Image 1 (cartoon, rainbow, N blue to C red):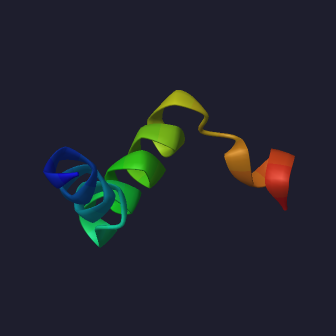
Image 2: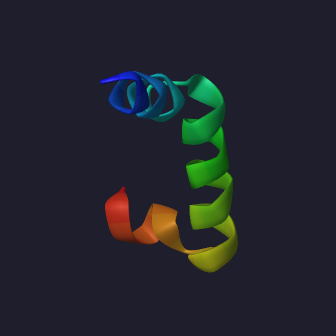
Length: 36
């Protein structure tokens, strides 16, 4: 259960979301055209 708690904390952390967004921007520079 400790492992899952750590994973949940990491996944729910804002920094992870920022990393995913920055990665998406690099991999898909036209993501705004696709999703907006």
